[in-house]
Image 1 (cartoon, rainbow, N blue to C red):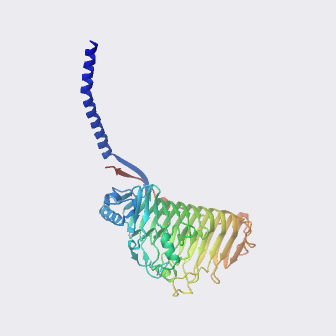
Image 2: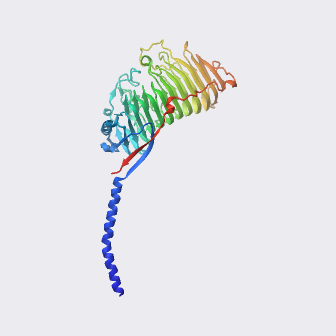
Image 3: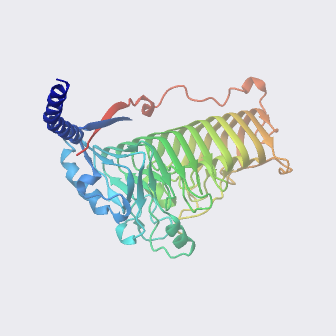
Length: 481
């Protein structure tokens, strides 16, 4: 009886095993099928969302750090351009090392970099087209001829976004720096990003490394948001300015960390007679929550190319560490133009050469055709709530003989001098203005007006239009095949 029961059980198990195997295989295939159809998504904040999406891999992109993806980027953007008037498009760059030369963006477009995506700038000069000098400069900055197109470039665009989950764009600039120092460049070095004649720009949540020259250069553009950018270059690298708004209106730069071989933010508007003729100022600029390290240059520079004018700049909550100067005004005879209505408050500086620096003899002309009668107007420069320590010299303020810098106001500023500071902490010439609550006591050209004037260097209360921009929550869906 027991043997009979055991025999029946073995027979049932024998029949059941194939069925279990089939079920297991079907389950595995079902899981694979579900995996093939699985859609992941991520969200990000942007001024505009897009109706269409694609990945660089859809266009033959190879993220091995060796294969050139210049054609893949151009093909992708060309293909996605069909959606510019149909909700726009976004191009996703996944994890990997994507070697590429220069490529142009389009309107109503988003370039998004995964957190482990690295765009690597090509070392092949054939992948960098040459374009004309900027009309407000008359020549290139490195050479009189044209200039190499920026890695990411766009002109005459509307609504363009470069963002990511702190993805990285590496300019691999050492080759360019060497050529610059050797004087072997026929054309001006490329920037990492440049947008010309463009309205509504967002550059955010990225890391920019080792740019050949300037990192971010919006020029002749408006309504610009630069947000959450980390910029890093060797402090000895030439002209690796961080962010350079140039003849731009309504710009906001915020929450950025910059280590640079040149000015962390450089505000510009054209060079000598070319900038005067072009006549396009930079105005309505907000800079806030900026951290800067630049031992040989400025935290924020106004100029020296300021011939189209600079007006209504508002900087607050600025931190500078081991940086040559705080907010520096750079100009010269022949520049023309103006720098006026500048407001700085809440600035903290540690280990500086100068806390305040203005110079009217910067020189560095585009050519010998500048007008020596073109004198710049510098007026309405306001600093308040400033704290600094380990400073070699409190201020170096040098206007132009016969063309003084006026309306300088410094209030509630405490400058802690370094152990080996200059014997005379302030030097002043051809300037005029007032101070209140400033330590150490300033020069006679900036007389102390007493504690009742501590709020004199006021900050504008009304908001600029760029602060009214509302961000949207955008989604990108990844289809795993």
